[in-house]
Image 1 (cartoon, rainbow over the protein chains, first blue to last red):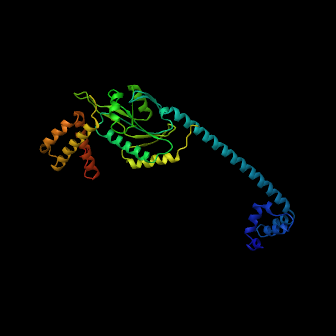
Image 2 (cartoon, rainbow over the protein chains, first blue to last red):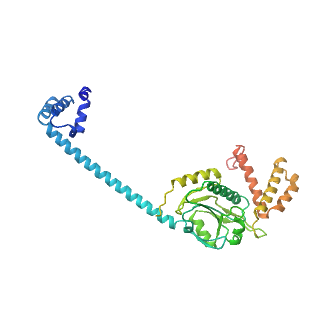
Length: 266
Length: 79
C-alpha cells in the first residue's frame, strides 16, 4: 500500500485528523494500531489504547471534529452576517451622503435654480473660481474642458457635466457668468448665488476664498483654493485634482472611477 | 466693471509674455523694456498688472529655489 510505504510519520497525523474516512471493517484497526505504534508514544499507553481503545478514540475524535466543524461554521456564519450588516450600514451612509452632502442651491447662468440632485446620473467635474481671475482660473477651466472633450470622445453610460462655481458672487451675476462660460465650452454651466449660498457650497467642498483689497477701479483679486472636483452619478464626492495634474492624468483617473462605479442609489 | 473677455485676456497675456521676455533678455533691466511695459499696462486691468508683477517675482524665486541657488539670509540673532 502506498500510504503505508510512505513511512511511519505520515500515518498518525492522517488518522487523527480524519478518522471518519477509514472504513470500519476492512482491517482499519490494524492500520490504526500500526499508526499508533509508530507514533512514538510510550509503549504502555500505546499498547492499551491501540488494542482496546481504537473505536472509542475514533468516536471521540469524530465528535470533536464534528463539534469543531460546527463551531467553525457558526463563526463563519456570524462573520458573514456581520460583514453583510457592515456593508448595509456603509451603503446607507453613502446613500445619505449622496443626497445630503455637498448639496447646494445656486442659479445657473440662464437664471435657473440648480441643486445637486439635478445632476444625478451624470459625472460632474466642478471648479471654483471667479470671472476676473487673471490666469489660474482660465488655465484650469481650459484643462477642465480638455478633460471633458477627451472623455466625450468615448462616451460612457453617464454623461459628463462641467460646472464652474463662482467665489465672487458680488460681481459674478448670471449675466457675467453667461459671458464668461461661453468662451470655454458650450455645456459648461456657470453657477452663482447670494453671498450666503456661495459661502455654503464652498464650505461643503472645503474651498477657501478671500477677496483682496480693492483698487481705484474697485477691482480686486479673489484668492481661493484651486481644485477640480469629481462627483459620481450618485452625487458623491469621488476625487479631486489639484493644479499639478495634467488633463491626461485627470482623464485616466476619471475613467478608472467610471469603470469601478456602482450606484448606491437604487 | 465687466471681466475681460477671452480675447482681451489673450491680448493681455501676450503683452505680459513679451514684457517678461524682454526682462529675461536684458538681465531684468526694466529701463530697457519701457515700451513693452507700457503696452503691457495698457492691455491688462491694473489689478492684473500688480498680480502679474508679484507672480513673476514668485516664479523667479521658485526657479532659483528649485535650481538650488537660493541662499536663505542668515538670521542676525544667530550671527
